Amino acid sequence: MMKRFVGFSILFLFLTVSAWAETWSFGVLPQRSAVLTAQYWNPILDYVGRKSGVTLELKTKKSLPEYSDAEARGEFDFVYDLLIFTPSHAAVGYRVIARTEGKPLHGQIVTPEPSPLRSLLELEGRAVGFAGKDGFPGYAVPMSALLRAGVTVTPVFGGNQEGVMAQLRAGTVPAAGVNSRVMQEYAAREGFKYRALWTSEPYLDLPVAVHPRVPEAVVKAVRDALTGMATDAEGLKILKESAAVIKQEPPYGFVPAQDAEYRNQREVYRLIWKKEGR
Image (cartoon, rainbow, N blue to C red; front, side, top):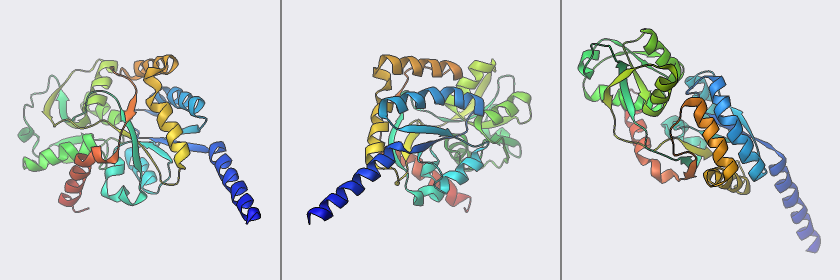
């Protein structure tokens, strides 16, 4: 009996040490360019790694569809996005552990400020830009509004949020479905003036979630380090410096969160999937 106990203890210790020694992937939705994404997230992940003892490696993809496919395969250990609430990703089992602190985000349909467009009805038959079909504030929410209004548009996909915003700025598309927060930050950096034709109800900002394969001790260490950043002098400094890169407004940091807080997002995704016959 004692030999068996010792054997189990050694195995448990080996598995625990292996988990802490491993590098865990942290997938981030490609809303912005790869350069901006790295400039924002790498200092944060480095801090979390040093505080938690868990090595995190930033992972993303060139476009939203590529990222969505990778996440649906369970490629990432931790993720920062809303795609986990799509029907096609449910089976993977990502679990929310935290979210961005601050004001809620909105889905919007926007147009350049000088545009003569004044209502959704005027978009009938026109091209409208979106990042990709799996996006939440930039596709599911605004497309639901267009469907409710009986407006048929031709979707033009820009690959990521700032990609479609660049198309809007260049005049390639007359309007675009966007994440209000990302749009505001892009406009501030680029000096782009725009106007919202439609704005949704508020939704919680993007969550940080974890794959079921990640050991609970690792999850807790990462969550505690991430949600404690804003109350630590070094952590807050890093958050402010990262925020300056993308023109993010305060408050900064992350707070604990749970899946139940995102029921509305799941329902919106479910309805748009059903309406589009996916």
